[in-house]
Length: 223
Image 1: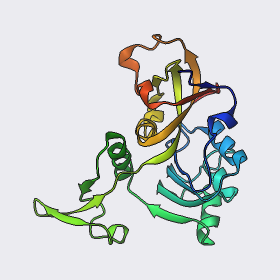
Image 2: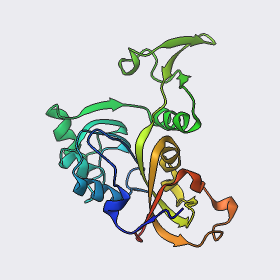
Image 3: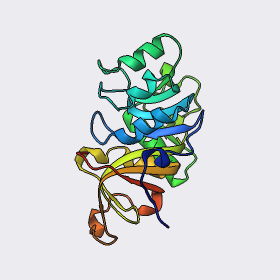
């Protein structure tokens, strides 16, 4: 199977109005900026976006999708960075719905989706407004709340290196949420800085097996 795509628009083909899109990156690290720009040009609206933060003031981070009015709902852990002005404007006007979620819970909801689990119980957030309508259970004398898996139609991620089969190696903190997002999506698109022949990446250096990757776009640059 040839996973390589040459054009960013081909990489994000299939994202439609209302699609659930998982966008990788942690702060300004590991952000698939070329793919985000391609989604902005695609023009799909009413997107449900799951991401760590809602913009860092960079030209083509996830804030671009808020600027364009393409996001209807966002699931994020740190939406209020001072540079997230495009998100804040849309949120304050009521155009964007926000689900605030602890970072560890977001990671585990993605992992649960990738592992085929039906959810998990966690004490994080129990008894707060964030989880007031969730199922609860007392475990070892402590209230826990049921968190559902978080599945995406698409995952847009970024890696330092890929081979032709889609086996990926991430650079430092770029590893973050990118691998679990890839596992949780029906279609995973990776923006990579370097493409190498199959077998060039040592097995111990494969952070995500190629079975989870559907499309590879080589962009170059610094991850």
